[in-house]
Length: 270
Image (cartoon, rainbow, N blue to C red):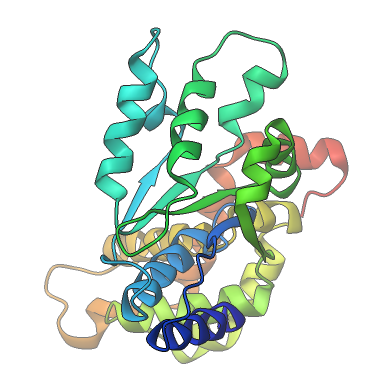
């Protein structure tokens, strides 16, 4: 992302010298859910606005259902409406591979109309143009691009989002707690990373990434609410204990029975 910022900044300086460069800035974000793709898309929108590449810093987030209709000739209109909303900023197409999956299987689908509408404006330049960010799983997104060579030629930047390590999930939890005004007891703070590693499987962490932290935070706060009385005041209201976190981890696994069945079948259950 830093390299992209530098490239756009140099391009902007050349423009001040009268040198015009019409560069395609569309992107592919590859990775599992919860790895920060949407958050980075918002940073890209703010960056482009600050550098003068875009006229707005907003991100319009869509999935297949926001672009594709169920009847002939309605998809183009539906997609055009979203393109108009995104003009001057970023259109973030999450799980973009869903647009081509049925088509690649030879099944009837109107997604082709949505892709055609997007491609019509992908070669536009200037602050009022749209920056497209297509996001999804790595393998599926490669198939998405392969469906239409014109798409691949228009997407110049690829960013790979790795799964979070346990230490990173621990850091994210601490950051979110602090930002929300919450605290951890000393023993909870010291044991947090070990709880995540021992209480969840690698497969589960890969499937949820940052969303795993969101679940743990919410369920730990639920445990605190159930534990304390209405007469509690001060820091006790916002301090999560080791027991709260332990119960939250257990609660997470209890509410993912399908995951436990799959992990047991694969021999990966914790």
